[in-house]
Image 1 (cartoon, one colour):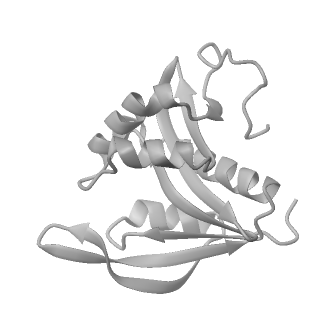
Image 2: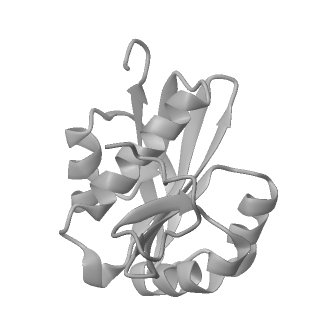
Length: 164
């Protein structure tokens, strides 16, 4: 099954369809963001990513946005900016589907490796990334805002060379 959405724009009728994020998705995307994260992105950050033409996709189920991802791709590398699934839909494989689609799109855009940061306090995401082939390659001290201060980020990466 392809990670890419069909050419038609009839995603509301298709179960679990992936398609590029559009400006009119931003209210739904931001609504998920503020439910999922204690320190959410602002609508302006999402809008800036769309205007910069960063690969940004949404997962649609029953006509509503269920999850999304955004990444940057340049000079043979991709950087995961945000991957998120609505909290009420956790545990159903949607995060894995989004991550696999992201990797497929990164590969299609010529990325040879993909980097991301993740909070050490997010064991579910870390387990997902490990299970999909990411390895921890470093740590960024005090990277994320956190209650009472800052939280480090684990830096993870996956090599896409030689993969089909």
